[in-house]
Amino acid sequence: MSCSSAFSIIFSVTFVVFLFSGLCKANREVQVDIINDIGSNIQLGLHCKSKHKDLGSHSLAQHQHWGFRESINFWDTTLFFCHFVWENQSKWFDILEANRDKNICEHHPCVWSIRPSGPCRLTGQEKCFPWN
Image 1: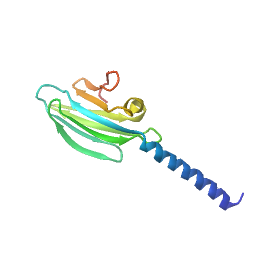
Image 2: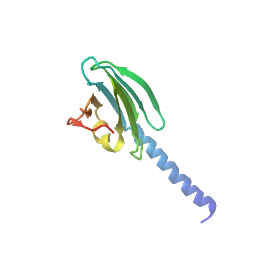
Image 3: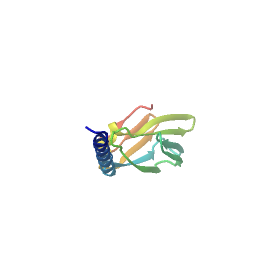
Image 4: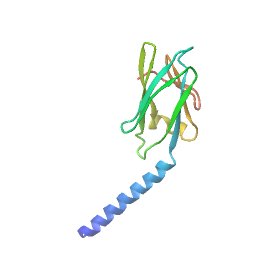
């Protein structure tokens, strides 16, 4: 096999993989919604980001919500984590973890209730998680 034939095959396979991953990514978008359920009249500060994208800082009053849309990548490694602060508390949680959330949150918004004991995913059957 000549070098040009090998290059053509490698290029073609690479092109198909990237084309396929782009098509899958477009169909695998999730909506994440975060609700402040910390307590009566307690302001919740939050700052969410991934390795490559910073969504900025936000402040939520009781029962107020904020959210974002993001695509799950081809390799299911998408991860967004949030830092939550209220009163004298400071907590972290992986708010979007592709392997954990993709089957539940691809067809419905992934709604998270932020509580002092930990975040609870309300989408599907309610499930609460410990803080990281």
